[in-house]
Length: 132
Picture: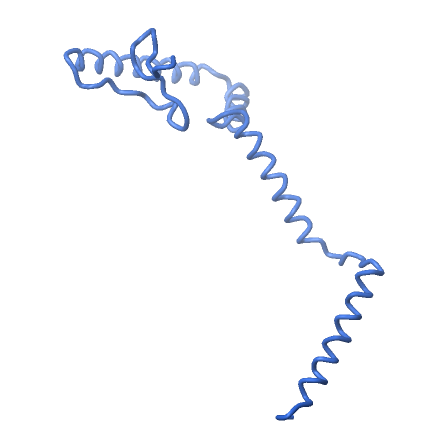
């Protein structure tokens, strides 16, 4: 809703990083009743999940755990970005770990030779002067 309040239960709908965390009822006349209802619902959900996990075979549990690892909490875009970041980091590490040096172009070799000549000329000039 535009106002941030859910039309069905009257509470603010959680968003962003805290979307999966429970929203506790605010102080008011029905605070205690709402709190107990919320706690009972959470306990019922926890028991249901636990019973479902306990009823799984070893293979089903392995598949479930793999799925949970692959589907982290957060948006699909954030997971996709994290995957791209990991791939880029892996390729960067592979580049750094490459054993054989990259072949330099002729232009790069020419620039390097000119740089060495300039350094030699600088050393020569630094030795000559009023203090040399």
